[in-house]
Image (cartoon, rainbow over all chains, first blue to last red; front, side, top):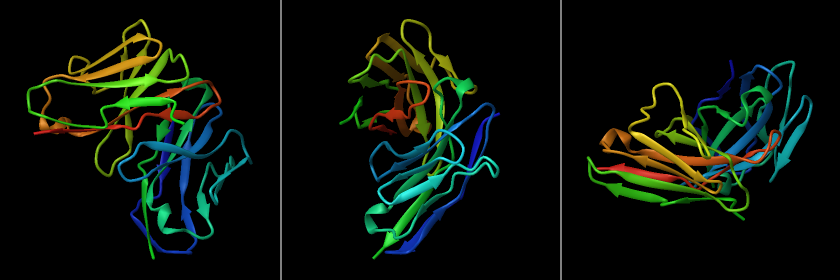
Amino acid sequence: GNSVTQMEGPVTLSEEAFLTINCTYTATGYPSLFWYVQYPGEGLQLLLKATKADDKGSNKGFEATYRKETTSFHLEKGSVQVSDSAVYFCALKTTNTGNQFYFGTGTSLTVIP
Amino acid sequence: GAVVSQHPSWVICKSGTSVKIECRSLDFQATTMFWYRQFPKQSLMLMATSNEGSKATYEQGVEKDKFLINHASLTLSTLTVTSAHPEDSSFYICSEVKGANTEAFFGQGTRLTVV
């Protein structure tokens, strides 16, 4: 079946620290992979995505590379800011499940000044 | 700008009452919309798939008589939590997907608190 396993949090970092949030997946078919971000009190927003192996998604300094060999899509940012404090969700969608998404449990990130 | 509008953003209701949540597609005729529920510190769990003009498809363990979904038009899907109880307190969020290789667009979510 389809599932996403995401690094558990919460994660607390100092401003300008390096961030990695691990995400691995299992999927039938050929998945597209996504990272969504949820700021406090808000809905989910797409952060970045990759639709095929070796693609790199990037946005706002965040990036993630679709690694088929390790079935991973780890999220990274070289220097986090206080405004990056949010919950991050890894998700996948496969061609054989229509438009249904499968989400990881979410990782809460707090960046302190 | 937003492509999915969800209303209300928060609601407090008394136990035993019903609450209706609306999810409106602003720029796309969505034949399918998805309803998720998120408990504190947990991920989004798909509750049901809302299909325009037909019955919704519910995930295992979701009571269809309690969570009534109506998708009467291509731009509006509603979720009604009937006879709400405190354990129904959660964050409910809808989404639409425009095509096979695109991301999901989410509504702002509705924080339901049943007292």
